[in-house]
Amino acid sequence: MFRLACLFLTSGLVLAAPAQADNRRDLVDGYVERIVVNALDEPDRHEPYFTETQLLNDFTLSFVEAYTGAVRMAKAAGAVVLFETDAMTGDPNRCPIGKVGVIDRTRADTRNMIDVSLQTPDCGDNFPEGGHRLMFIFEPVAGSSSRYAIDDVLRPLESGGWFSLKAWLERQASGKPVPWR
Picture 1 (cartoon, rainbow, N blue to C red):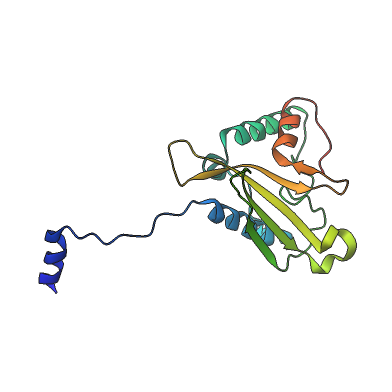
Picture 2 (picture 1 turned 90 degrees about the horizontal axis):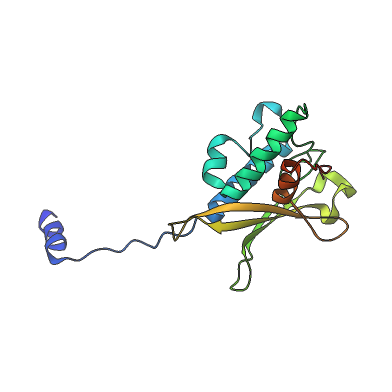
């Protein structure tokens, strides 16, 4: 065995490891897990979305600037919470989540995005199509070919179009707050 190992080392043969895939799916999976736990409405198990570590590692600088600006303005206004409902889904009812679907929607002509569907079968007609849909938007991390950061989280509006979490935070930070949706 030792001779075989020496043969590999001296012959210059290198066993190739698979190329490191980008981290987008891992980021989405982590946030989906938090969303599922938070939908249970069990305060002892609540998983935050925006800790210091998460903001520094998972989100783009422009998202972090929007978030911290919104927090600053909320504090100045005497608010006790920034989000009136779940920050990711907008769900005020905390409906338990059943099936989860995750699809990479990135194409050459689109932004880096991953589509998430979260079924809420026990909530009746409270949600369109029986659940939530989120679109995680990513930007590449400077200096890395395989790391991405979340730049925005979108969800469809009942009236059509998309609600942008980042745009909402930017609006709050600007001092011209808009209602949480």
